[in-house]
Image (cartoon, rainbow, N blue to C red; front, side, top):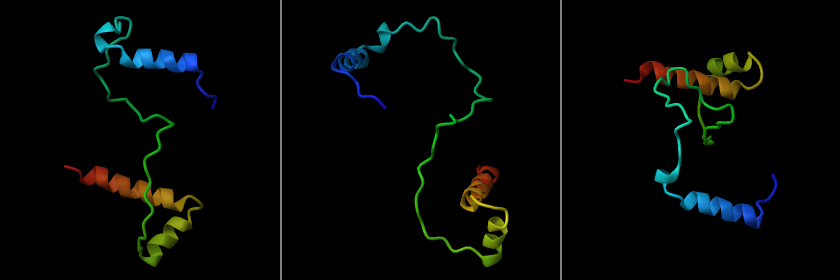
Length: 86
């Protein structure tokens, strides 16, 4: 990634300090239906390394389905959370 020049940095500072009331948003349509919204393909949730004990057969089942088994375990846990949220 290239560095920001002094001129660019000054322009960014001026834009940052500009009040919201001066920003013209008339040409931007208002979005009220977010039902089809998806996370950006660049979104990466924060990961935290832990020690977790799993039953050997559960771990073997996930590992038998190929690489990235930890991601699949995480996805399974996330699905469980979705199904059990109130």
